[in-house]
Length: 407
Image 1 (tube, rainbow, N blue to C red):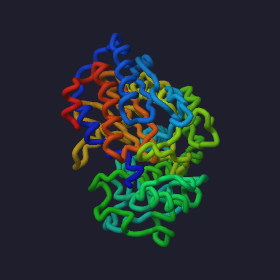
Image 2: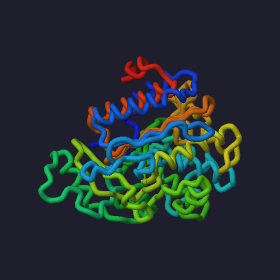
Image 3: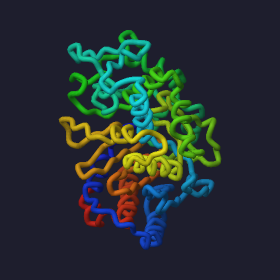
């Protein structure tokens, strides 16, 4: 079971984005969209989902469908809390650019200038890993099997008597054995010679900057570096500089801070429930939020690009969204994938969750979709894409034909 990559949907989703045309504010379409999404909620495989469509003035449409908990018939709403997987890394990008703007570090600085331990890429021929490499997923750091050591479950994953497919039994035993530890301790054990889980296999056989490979552990390492450079715990830094100023009152890094009644039940396979879990490397995938709160942040990103943001200077947003053309198939921003026609996209997949957010700062529109199910099976992935397609179509963003041709 492949977990936490967050980009298994990138190619089909980029296919959707490449079909976008000029935005027409389709206010008359919201009732149609609501009716279409109600039908999809009744007919497709997603237990529940929530959507938001925003522009720089606020929400154009937002609503939840289906269930946050199927057994309890708890509705999924725009205020339901869900961990959003690697879409959490968009926050790393924001605080990184702010730290750079404040002179705390530089994009082309050697990461070892800020770390309390030393990381040497074994195949780099002496070339250092830089902040830019981490921010664009070109550091050469691989998740490998260490990705699975990040998950912490405090409850039994599958209670005795549960009928569990064999592929899930294997991962549940492994995850149940993981031990909580500080993020810095985990990173040192994975990435430094002599570390408990160190191996040359934790790195690509190419020097930093040469190859794009998405890395959760690389993203977490950058968050740890920001923490060291600013001398502030990452959770405190993001709360004080992003969440509180934006009024994001239902956004958290810790389960203990969230209200249990507002949280989803995670589902995998054929709606098999999972207990809540935490991540040791929480900045790379552990943000818990709602489509309502994330919509506030998406609005701020669009305003910031136009020099009207309330959080940071315009330069921070411009750098965040600047193109970093690499020798790969698409443009990459700082923790964003950027299509040739200007749309920025980030996806998040994890155990029992799926998230997609996309926006175009020039055309002034953004879309968000959450669901509380893993997309490792084709029927769930197709259901997720059906909802996304309907959102984009009814928003005046693309034709239905483009969406079908992208699959």
